[in-house]
Image 1: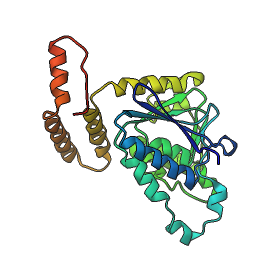
Image 2: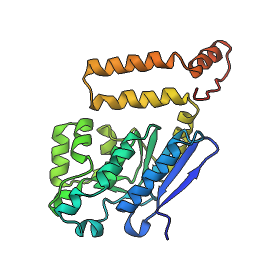
Image 3: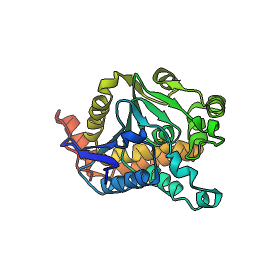
Image 4: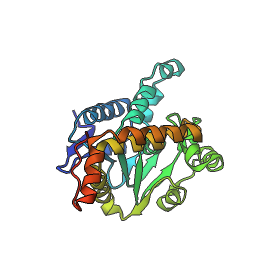
Length: 257
């Protein structure tokens, strides 16, 4: 059986996950999403893994859901579909996920990108929500996550027209943090992940938690959570190590304690 996702852990604490259905343009069928969740579950409990880089190939990140699979599902089957739970598991992953996007990120592929924490795009990256052309709407958070990121006006336009967006456009609207040469996208993403992997793991975890809370809380609630996390980190050995290393003019050694 073909390996749906290739997984590799570097010596620097980065897990590289590569979608591996090139013949299907990395279409996200249930089996692929389920395997992704299994890999993330393993990474969650593996102290060696500090950050994830998720990518496809140079020509396609993921060209949407697997339409052959979707076509066989009627309304009842969709109500019982496991997908919503799989997306929730991806969203609940506590360590940083960096998306390294080359080529097409369409439909569910775009929505998978929206589930990650930092996005790097190759110059050839193309994004779209083409579900409207099939009489559907984005069903994995496309209307909700994207609207919270870029606002109602652009989300309405993109979801209602299926317009294709360039890497430069998504960078302009804050969907990706940087556009890099296509041949170097994964390399840049791994280098960024390595920088993150060198930081205090517990601080990284609550930074992610605090920032993601903006979609669920008011400003006052978010500030309260931020302060709680700030105080909680004060009890960690990593905070003590970081402060001691600063005064001793050396590089800190964080242990996630």
